[in-house]
Length: 112
Ligand code: AMP
Image (cartoon, rainbow, N blue to C red; front, side, top):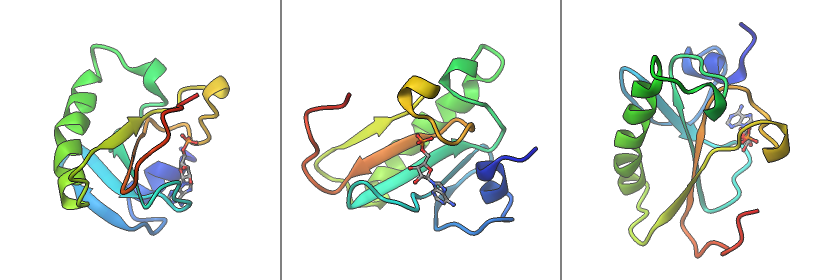
């Protein structure tokens, strides 16, 4: 499968890894939109939020169990934002489920 994030997970494409477990991988975004900008992905290929179902939702649980640890390690003591773009209207550019962790500064109130 020709998936950028699958290639990052298996080491074919280098990344700045910040967290790894059996099911979850997290790395720094290559074009950060805030001082801290981390992407958290399941190691299994799930296309987007729209493809989450009862067979794969445990990977999403694992991601959300990891996020507080990743945020703490990144020094995000006063908060952070978690975003997942899903589909064309949300400008999802990589079709492998991922959650952006944004922080390290006071973020805009606007999200849309
Ligand atoms: P999205 O637009 O929500 O699909 O987010 C995809 C994100 O992947 C963007 O924020 C990109 O900057 C990021 N990205 C693309 N290629 C790489 C890469 N090789 N390493 C790290 N992040 C990447």
